[in-house]
Image (cartoon, rainbow over all chains, first blue to last red; front, top):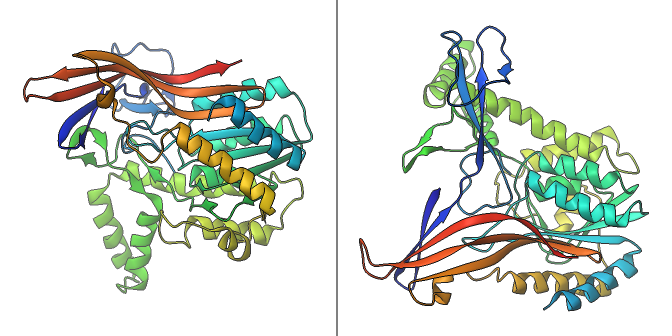
Length: 72
Length: 329
């Protein structure tokens, strides 16, 4: 959930929004390609150069200032 | 205005233009605003399938922008059903909306019509962390990075190889090299997308004109919030702008106003005003895809609660569901 607060006539109203879905890519150091078949969070540490890249899946809802995906 | 009255406006525009009209509104109402995003493509598919192949499709579009790649997908989807695709711009049609316009054979702009630059901001896992929200990353505007390098070269007299390396190193110390790589990839992506969208026209544009349009919309306007009126779009940027006659102009503006009223675009969404007791449910619409055949809305729904802890009189709004919903048929 993402939090956002707005003041209406001196009254504080806070909004909670569902976050966008997040896809996780495991980039393997030896192949350079995302490893498709794994279950997060049980990522096998294949070697020292592997790392996980989170990528948000954007949808139409745009409740707060964009901060997680490429946008125009 | 109810859908029945809006149908009359859409039908009048459709008859005047000899086209199928599909309206796509991403509302910019505070707290429930929406944007162009990939989840709308299925909604468009539903409307396009209801019509089947047709001579001309006019997209009535109001948006402040959104996802970079969705216009490419939408333009291709719409072109599956028609050889001629146009966009009707009653008012705001910025960023990703402008990108979508590039694929149109004709951009019909009213007096209030506005386009915007196509200079995206990019975010990936390596962008600088937002100090106010540690889980968020600060977007980097692509043109800002290239402007910094241009500033170093042109104004600060950075010309030798050593100085250029220093200027770049300074940048890489503050922005992760992989974030900079992402910037460069998107610098090329937006130019490539714009060119390929312009190449979708029924009458192909000459190479020089395509370059001119892309350069203007990406780097020569110098501000992301520059509002491009129709005269600038037509005469300076050389986009395929068409001026509507007074009847079409009036219809386009009436239809926009109808959506603006329906979505209450000018007033922030404050469900607290409708709170009855300590807790109540709400549902509010943030965007539309509508044609004569049906209407889909992007609906936010959730719960409003009055809370007296930690401070008295607080109102908490939890948006529990948000998504496209078919309202009719």
